[in-house]
Length: 389
Image 1 (tube, rainbow, N blue to C red):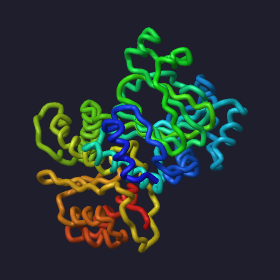
Image 2 (image 1 turned 135 degrees about the horizontal axis):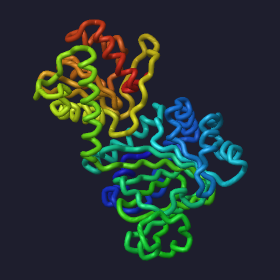
Image 3 (image 1 turned 45 degrees about the vertical axis):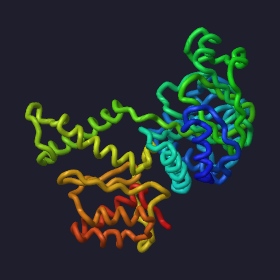
């Protein structure tokens, strides 16, 4: 686990997560276990569309053939080192899970505590928080010495058991050493110009927002990286435009009147709907603490009369705007008419009150039909916004 005080200490050492530093012994092995990673790995392999989340390397060569093999034969053991060596024929190997759907309520609850601590300390949330997992004894990072241009800040949580070395150059030294800003896949000769940091089990390292870096992992290790992306108005606008178009096309198919009256023309009214879509997108992001991707909805309902509570620190978000409202949980949402019962339910869940689905639905019948109330309550469960106590 990670004490919130250690997050504040890390923020102070790193100038609010901007400068390189290592906080020693910041978390215990209960934060993310090999069993948790096995579960995440298997969730990736359960969906053909997630193949791109997985990459496989031997030394610095990417291996699409082994990527397919790992995807088809995910680990069934928590001994990931032995499992990995058996898949790579005993050679040094690297496995990267990029933005995997975590689908692990227990770990996500712990991660929500970390994200909340980061945002409370930084004074703001970020445009996105992307998880990445690194497994193996692959030597230098398969990407070479490089600069993560699209990433705001990176926090590396080192699980070990081996020690990882991180080398960091400022841009001037890196250009002087390499002659440019391209990735360097043979960084050994230029390490004397870098600053070295040793990251042991339980340490957290902040990678700087500027400059270049390369990791060196001589012995088997597992690392969890959280990439905090600065808010990008362009990305947000594109997501909102996609959402607005989807809503309008749905209205056209069903024959519904558009939500907002706007200028005539091609009839799609995308421009008019952009501000509404941005509003919905902001509620979704807030409900998942900017973590991406959101969990896929689940289908089966919990056992009858099970007491449920919100997951970790992920809030249930209710917002109103003029004559409409949005209810969001874990990155999903419903658009509904404004209702005092919705606001009350969100407040009670955010106060960590324990309720059954039937009790949630009963609260909502003050403003909705019984069927609608049951549907709304069931969505909170399907989204992973609430979990069994």
